[in-house]
Amino acid sequence: MNDISGQTSIVINAPVDQVYSYLLDFTRHPEWVKNLQQVRPETGGPVHVGSTFQTQEGPPPVSLRQKLPMMVHFMTGVLSGAKTYSRTEITGLEPNRRIAWKAGVPKGDGYFNLAHWELLLEPQGQATCLTQRFVYQPQNNTARRMIAAAGAAGLEQACAVSLAQLKQQLERTPA
Image (tube, helix red, strand yellow):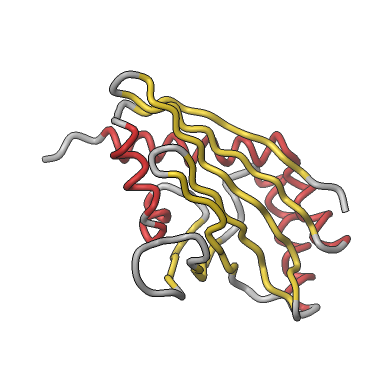
């Protein structure tokens, strides 16, 4: 299947250790990722490579013209046995530098859709340049059509919306 990849960057006016600590708490991702409603840990203890989470999410913040076909293809996947949630597994942690994970919608013994995500942090004085990378690997034609409805540019724009929310969240002055 054809992979769809992209990346988006933003500068956050917060030190890299503060940004990393916030991002490492996956249960807080719904505070800034526009299409996440809930992230629930499946493994106990501190986050480590191999930690898993179950997520409830909706379509990414793309245009209605992109969102509608995505939802039709997703529902077709659900009707063919795909779950209505995603499973996430941490695949890489480099303190204050990188967080990586794979996330997929389970279907049978595999996935309906699978994506690899990476957050790269680069200090810029007291600020942090954060780059979010993704590689979607649709596991069948229905998933391929679902992801193609948004395309790399639409998915990059959806990431930019969430990163802007993250910037706002982390730069908020405590009351």
